[in-house]
Length: 257
Image 1 (tube, rainbow, N blue to C red):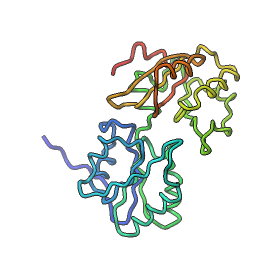
Image 2: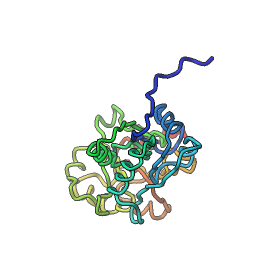
Image 3: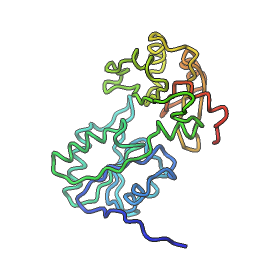
């Protein structure tokens, strides 16, 4: 039996919707994200948006790639923002589609500020971030009352391409029972070394989750001391999420996928 239609907002011409596409599995799209995909005239999408998600776009929509991948040529952020503004001013319904959540290491805040400054109307549609969904698909809870009452999301890749110097790694090592590191694969040897030097137990469990929630997801469980060598030996490639903390041990019982 078909129920009542959901009272979803109308995607008006001249608006930009900044939408989180989730970590890859199209089943993790929100209803509002799927609604936006079906309505949009222009879809400006990032590198980590899966083909399965793009397949749900309005067949008449124009798809425009605006992805960024570390170490590879990519469009400058101001150019992307100006493109969104120009498309909106032309009267199009513009969907800016970002992997995960647009406000968690997705530069959604920068683009929203540019739209606001240009007096372009916009809507934020949150998405499920890989730091939560990736761990869940690996059978690792982000929090568990027997292991951690806090979790910290950090980036392992600063705007200049190096390990972020603005992070207080000694404080993170001591104070956060679980660290979830985005974009940390390239600098994993240095990140692990900084955490160990700051007092984190070298035997702390670590999980590296590659291509989280996708059919070819891979999960490597190791320790902080052995993580860099084990990743190299296993040939793990980005995109990855790295979880550091005792909660990783729960995967032994909870690996459901």
